[in-house]
Image (cartoon, rainbow, N blue to C red; front, side, top):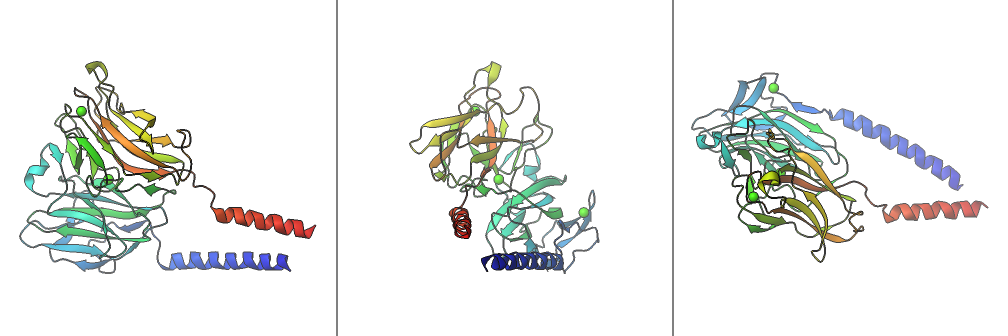
Length: 355
Ligand SMILES: [Ca+2]
Ligand SMILES: [Ca+2]
Ligand SMILES: [Ca+2]
């Protein structure tokens, strides 16, 4: 009798699976949402199209807001994102002419592309503007939302553009509290004056600017290498076995240093693991690249449910004395939920009964 019920259960799962595939096909689960190659902003994909928005022939056709006095937004329909997935897109634009120059630029002010969780009235997950004509690639973690909405915002006399709006899949992960700095330095405890939240970093000797590895903002101490300071996260609970982040920078070397580093602290603020901040080979331009780094939390002596902190330290005052990071997230193994344990117990119970 029990065996029959199990078979029926499997049949039901198959039916649900088939229905799910049909449903997903029905809503056109495409990787590319819009690349504007149709030559128009399609009202079937865009819920609201400001009169200042149109198509520009850039490297391909893109959507952009015309420079000038007319302001307005371009708002997409809700775009489906898979569990743990990301929205990807390319962005260019201007937001005040001075930001086009070399330098270190903070949050956008008048023109940007934003991604919202859920519908157009959902929370802003990220704001992006490259301050240049070249289209740059960005990815935005959907942060658990099953849909996101893309909004091009033009509140001034300059412009912003976007292209190749698409979705990608991802593995199980969870950003820590403001772990991608999309809310600036909120939720982090800082010391010193070195740390800045930036949308673009371009010292004159680098050929390519640095942009966020996730979202539109990241943190860096590059603007003045002589400065020092620390950034410490809020308390993090171990729900997965790894803490991963994207890093850039150097740690002094021949010029004296070795004090730039990333650390894991236990609940008593003891340092239990360290990654040195020599992310780039000295003398080599970084070209805006990021290197993924990670801490094995269990190897550091933590267990699931424990509390810990992540800390970035700029302790170097000389040349090659800066670091940057973004996208601090829990990744890796998710502990076996109690329900699996109960399920196993149930099977054992059934086997025992059969005997
Ligand atoms: Ca295009
Ligand atoms: Ca970020
Ligand atoms: Ca420094």
